[in-house]
Length: 150
Image (cartoon, rainbow, N blue to C red; front, side):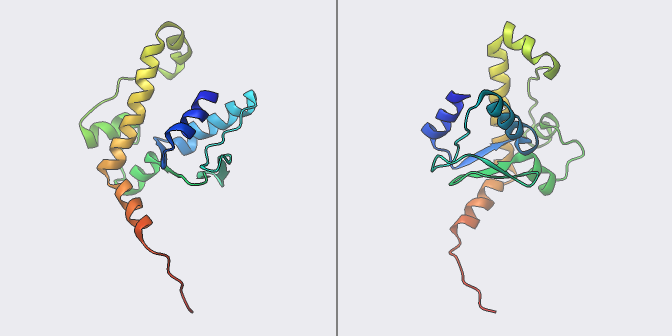
């Protein structure tokens, strides 16, 4: 986990994304970091990631975008799993690792689990690009701030 925090700092991404990271990955990271007493200093200013309400995250200087929420809002698929959405939008299916056997797979074939995780990350990003969510955020970021008078 320390290496993961270091990687965030080293590669300095503008966007942190994944598929259902709001409901699974980030809460799990927080839980595991707490167990191991590791600070998740993901902010550009080295501040900790903070959960706001149930599905919103604050990471100073970065944007957290959950591909699952955006897919739900933009295309309303009948099936919302990453595999189903990737198949529908990209024409590709992911190679699955049974979550119930993840620990066993990690012990026997860690490269298979790493490939699975990398594929998940790539698919989430490709889906966001396909539904043009990243472009929407980019355009929003280009608007100058306006002061409203009422």
